[in-house]
Amino acid sequence: MEQEARRGPLASGALRNLPNALTGLRVLAVPVLVWLFLEGRMEAALWVFVAAQVTDALDGVLARALRAFTRFGAIFDPVADKLLGLTALALLTFTQRLPVWLLAAALFRDVCIASAAYILARTGRTVPTRPTRFGKYATFFLAATVLVALIHAAHPETPLSRPAVFALAVVALQMLAVSWAQYLWWWIRLMREPAAGPA
Image (tube, rainbow, N blue to C red; front, top):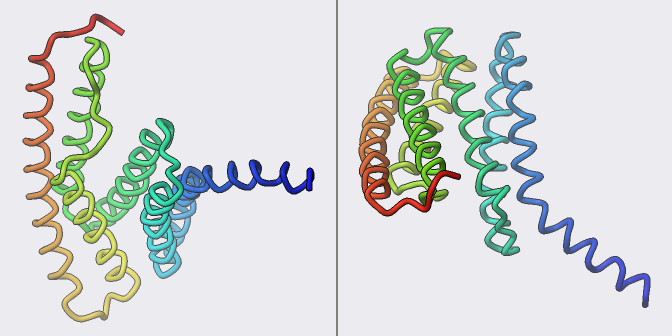
């Protein structure tokens, strides 16, 4: 009985750390994706990207189900998403499977967001950790664009895959632009609030 009581908290603790473990797997998938892509193993790279996206969906579901919300997870999860998404986007751009302007737009928006968060933190203001609605849309369409581009790379004979990649890239660009404007509005509003002082 005493042994079972000792196992309970350990099992509970392990389960509560599962969302963060899945996020860690997503980070580990990045160098694997790069290696497979550079080796020309597009089919394998495609499945690694799909598996990583599945972990992204699962860690959110598990975090809500287990009520395992942590500040570490709130910061680490979007960082893992950015690392995976931008790496895949860069690989596809440098091999001319995606347009340069999409990568440039994604990098520009993310640099602006990171700079805004730094300024807010340094001036003692609240830094939002949740993405905006259009921020989620932008992430979704970027992932969809990368996914279809990887499918086209693995199966270039697939009909309509090239037009679908371009159409998704245009929609992703629009979502990036709208989300950038939304984050800019948030930043201006937060900067107008009284500062607590330098961090």
